[in-house]
Image 1 (cartoon, each protein chain N blue to C red):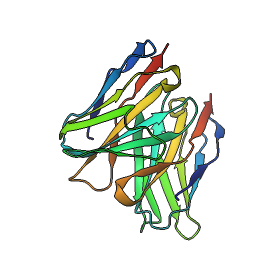
Image 2: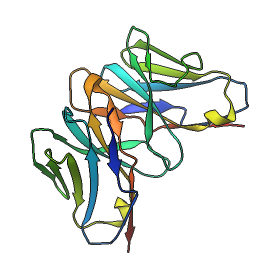
Image 3: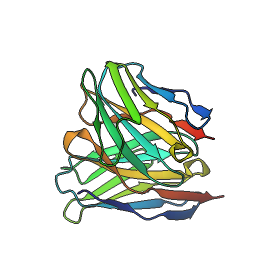
Amino acid sequence: GEDVEQSLFLSVREGDSSVINCTYTDSSSTYLYWYKQEPGAGLQLLTYIFSNMDMKQDQRLTVLLNKKDKHLSLRIADTQTGDSAIYFCAEKSAGNMLTFGGGTRLMVKP
Amino acid sequence: GAVVSQHPSRVICKSGTSVKIECRSLDFQATTMFWYRQFPKQSLMLMATSNEGSKATYEQGVEKDKFLINHASLTLSTLTVTSAHPEDSSFYICSAFSGRRTDTQYFGPGTRLTVL
């Protein structure tokens, strides 16, 4: 079955760039997503990338996709304390179901 | 973007009681909705897929008689946790997939269930 993996924790200083990495196994994935979850809240869609794209930029967010290595990354430029949250990558497989990674907790130090 | 709401946001109940959680798509029709549960500091685990007008599809290991799902309209799906026990305490999140868009699921804010 599908498997999506992320590192558990990332700590950066305010103003630095954050890079959160994700690997997946399903080569038939059509879309890959990044979601943000703040404490006690639901998931907020940050951005997504179609599988035939290599890169997508949206303001401070840059998504890179290496389909050959099945590697997805999210770069947050000029990271702010409000970016502290858990970030989930997810892949869309057959039946429109999402398979989530375990989440990366981003801590931004002032 | 599209909005999905959940009600209630938080519920505390006694062991043995049943709890109903509602998931509504507010500005679009949701042909498919998904129910997830999330334990503390863990990822989301898909429980079931809810299709309007038909029976829900449950993931392996999820008891369909315990977690009753009803998707009676294109804007509402309900999850009823029957005879709740403390181990059912969790964060339940729904998401809605709009048939018009094939690329995005919209998530509700979640419902925290605590069973005493």
